[in-house]
Amino acid sequence: MPIKYARRLAGRKRTTDANRHLGFVLAFVAGATNAGGFLAVQQYTSHMTGIVSSMADNIVLGAYELVLSGAGGLLCFLMGAACSAIMVNYSRRHRMHSVFALPLLLEAGLLLCFGLLGARLSTVSGLFVPVTVMLLCFIMGLQNALITKISNAEIRTTHITGIITDIGIELGKLAYWNTGTSSIRPKVSANRFRLKMLTLLAMCFFLGGVMGAFGFKHVGYIATVPLALALVTLAMVPAVDDVRFLIRRSARRVKAKL
Image (tube, rainbow, N blue to C red; front, side):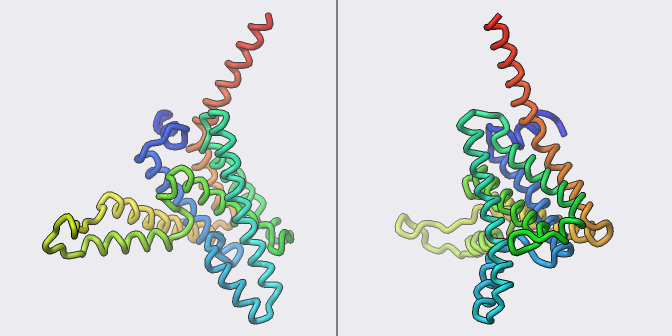
């Protein structure tokens, strides 16, 4: 990956194209992690709607242990989103190049941990759920909050409901038959650029899901290692830029003291 492209993709200065391209990559990663992770932990870890609904059902059914299990996953997702917000806001206040790269590196590290230690962690009890479930829920919350802040809530990557809804809205606009348009009744028109982007996001998520499920089926937990390496590749250039800046600043301070 060219250095300039990597810097533009995960760096501090944002463009519409950079947000869109990063969204495609993260949608693929989320699809692979979510679908593949299901084969590992027997539950989807980005679907908070389903988790909250199942908690409500289980309260009525008296299955309080499952209610706590859902609460554990929900809390981990929430903590991941909060962690992403803290990292991004800290980096912004200190004008770091790796504003968005640091959460990506953290996500890569957690995916690597899941891939290399998943078999052991699956037997370790965490916050009402196994540590593997905690990791995946935290990762999904971390990533969803990151892309939300990057795109000002225009792009989502960890779940498809909003994407499909927006695709339906744009298709409805596209199919609308305008007659007698005027200032009182303005023309209804679809945002074709947005429709294309949303469709590609859904396709990337689906393709990632297929690849993730295939990987988990054939090689197990280690299937997340390539995903982690891909995220490191995305985030490495802005992080190195910050390291180089700190080294130069330290050198200037040493010279000033001399």
